[in-house]
Length: 203
Image (tube, rainbow, N blue to C red; front, side, top):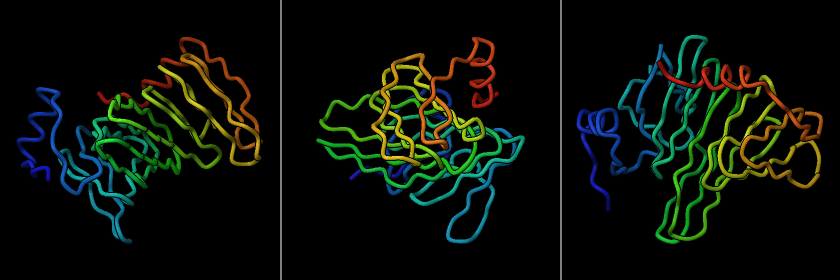
């Protein structure tokens, strides 16, 4: 069984050394914050601070001035932008398999998924309008724009409004309009893409 690491030591490892750390019951640990994000758990709300643990079912909430960077238990990194609500529904890592399900209720996000060499990996990110299956990649999305981009590697995006087959996106490709049952190509300019990523980059 992994050993629990003290909050102060964990912060030092993550922020100063960038090292992997052991997790106990937490699905993620808060590596960094901007502003004053909160965590909703079992009907209650509390401030979310650097070093806090996030368990399955917690809702990470940011206002217009807040951002959060989470280190997931599989070493993936989830960046949450302002005006967002994100839940980790499932995160199970075994020697021969990995299953992760993230749910973006609202807002903007970026996920850098750690490589998994132990066997099968099922990584799913669900928004109100689409579900994206990803493997060893970097993914960005924004529910306000109803858009998803593959920044590295490949992803498969399927609109929830229809039973259409998933669309495979190679690195650098984006889609939007999933609420209409489509995966319409989106071609942001370099400036637009830089602005999108800035929204989920912590100062």
